[in-house]
Amino acid sequence: MKNVAILGFGCAGYHCAMTLRGEGYKGDIHVFSDTELPPYNPMLTTYYAGHRLPWKGLFPFGTLKGIASSLRLTLHTNSAVERLDCKERMVRLANGEAFPFDTALISTGARVFVPPIPGLPKNNVYVMRTPNDAQALRDRLDRGDVKRAVVVGASMVGIKVAELFQRAGCACVLADLAPSLFPLAAVPEVGEELGRRVEAKGVELKFGVGLSGIRETGDGLEVSFGEEKLPADAVVLAIGTRPNLDFLDENGPAVDRGVLVNKRMETSIPGVFAAGDCSSGYDIQSGRHQIIGLWANAGYQGVTAAGAMLGQSVSYPGTLLHNITHFMDMDFIGFGDVKAQGEIIRYRNEGFFLYAIRREGKLALVNIVDNHIISGVIKSFMSRKFLGSCEPISPMQRVILLRNGLNEDIIRLLESTELEGGLIHG
Image (cartoon, rainbow, N blue to C red; front, side, top):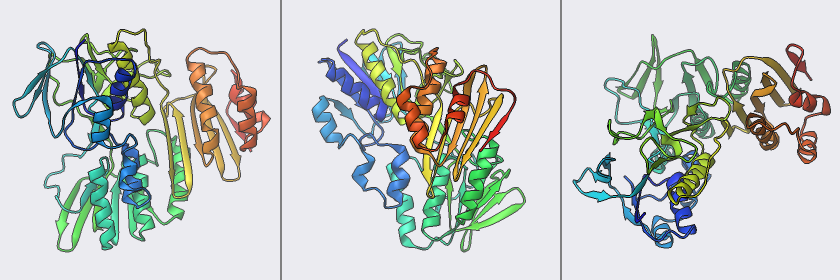
């Protein structure tokens, strides 16, 4: 192996390059990126937009020049990849240039989904994914002329954007077709509880409404949800993301939403790997392939891909779906399958609320409100169970749970293999 191509340079791409060099690889590493920005964390963009993080804080690995120098990378920036030619083992760019590769990593990440709304205005409609997106919204907020805002999408990003408007003193509506907050991570009961707390902070929620149009008016925008029309000075679309895979063709690796990979992060094309938000990796709970768009997950996958490129015996066992977010002075943590059916555990302790579903002797879902400290213990316990471990919660983990709001009864219930019907505790 003399020539490695890394397509896209986010968390996964960086960790792949870093691992290759750390393991002694001395060949060429060509990095292809459609931007001149260094790897950034998309989940930090709202913090920058709200003046809670400096610009350089978006880039945890440093400057692109510094990274390229330390890892001896050949950069191709502002270079859109037109096609990954797997037959000829060539990376073909939109400008006509082509570069050979022996092995390649697809780590092109994801982009914001913008619904195909006819006549979507170019002004005053924002998204939130990249540092440039964050800069655009920050500049608009700094102008101080947003009095009414609409955020479409009750997602982790959507609630953080709504918080930006709330903190700026703007009247804000957060709308979604779903029935409650965080529909992909929170069961309706927990989503509704969070919704009540958000409304108490002054954000208006509209659920069960689908976006049907946005048009410019004389003094701003008009946002339509069916027959209902809302005035707005600014609209932010936070509906979701789609993987960046437009450069793949029928001769490329197999795709099911994301690029399908095995536990070595290798695709259906030998020597071609994928990692991060564009890859469909292994969900240890369901046993199926799924895009799991998490920063840490992308890093681990990049490390695994590098090891596989070097011929090492590596395996990434997969991960458990989870979401952790802090907003408006509250926390939400979700683990597992939000559609799971089974026996229910509920536990309340002042503002702390835990909702769990047990199925076939294992925790299938846990939602936690306002107690992020216990989240690591819960995730570790659930992950071990899905990987086949019979070990109970360890004594040290038990102490963490006891010191942070749980009691012995509820801990035993979380550990137990059977429950007698649904349970409400506390």
